[in-house]
Length: 175
Image (cartoon, rainbow, N blue to C red; front, side):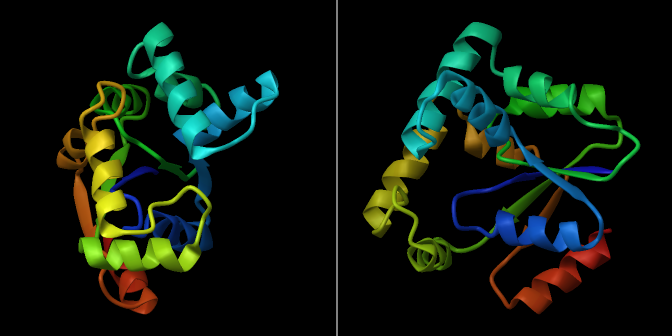
């Protein structure tokens, strides 16, 4: 089974991935493809570099280029989690390559997302609600990232606004 994860920053995609890894899923992400390419170029791995290089790759190879690159590395006979899906074309390519592919959207209220982002305290993450809204606007109004359109295409939704045990229970029901 191949499960893709999508959702806004702070919704809990990483926690969902961790729970799936406990169940034997192999984790990968479209961002990992970008990270590998940035390392080859000798560039720093920052959110800004990830975003700009992803844009560059998409301009050269089309909006589904990251999904194409990643698809070559996935064994369809194993269970995988694919994180960082941000464009509808990526879903299209993953569904073409993996007929059992399911896209899972992880949702949470904005205030909960912001609290999680603040708690993890990553250098380039938004620190205020205004900064979070600005980042979400950027991720939705860029031809290279169409996060809302991607989220809308999900096969399954998990609302992550409770405890980790409640989230785990929801995931086990889906599996």
